[in-house]
Length: 360
Image (cartoon, rainbow, N blue to C red):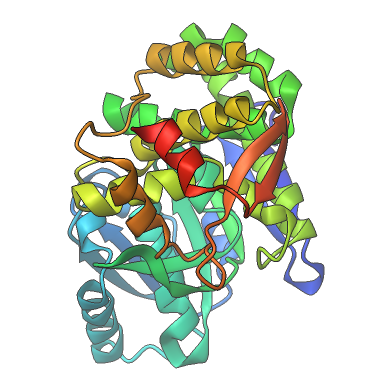
């Protein structure tokens, strides 16, 4: 591989899998074909991505492979049981067997629902992630979390099910809208806050290059984010400990998404506002300086992200929705806060009084 292409691994023993990162990987001769060991392939994508990249992916597969393209609607509001059932309808009609490979071509919604479909179909088939949004490239495509949404909570129904490979073609980001791109940057910011203070400083120093989608800057941001995600997942695949730190801002953010209706706020936008709330709560508890909150707010604003939750959401609304969050245990809400910049911790002793002081 050239210097502009790299491969790192998620180390999970005999389920170890590669993350390929580089530009124009979708047309890299033999890469996709070499990752598929079956004679049947299901490529799941959406109505936005299909016209851009579906034919390119199909063109990389040998003629001997039976390919079933499945095109679903675009949007978080379609990450549902109904869409999952429609996927299974098409796969079953095409008579795919348990040696088939599912390929997720798209953003986080496509990746999540494809992974869950792969986990369920014939009790588990191989699948490959080809994320085409920044958020999916740095977060949801790596680590094996798959799910569909329920009206009472986001990602409440799903499975841990690892892909066999992740192919990140940074060239796909050239067709990504500004709002969706900024939403992905929120997850990049998260990694510096929770795990790597030096990476946080690098993000702050390179914010303008990130906004401009400078190739080298973006490639490093994606690679470092994936390195951190891979380390955390390898240490705690099923979120019994360390992996929970990846949820910084997500408890607040999921409440925003549920309240506003899936798709109204993008996931990364809700996480951005949620991270500010989590870091502000950390400052109120004295574990980080208040200056970090100000710095984070300015960074997110510069990246094009919101820093405040919807004004109509009061503390009682957040508390009711967060009590339903899948990270709650025995009715006790759990929050990821910062013990220091670059060092996150999970706490379960946040009081309602603290939340009222934070939100109202």
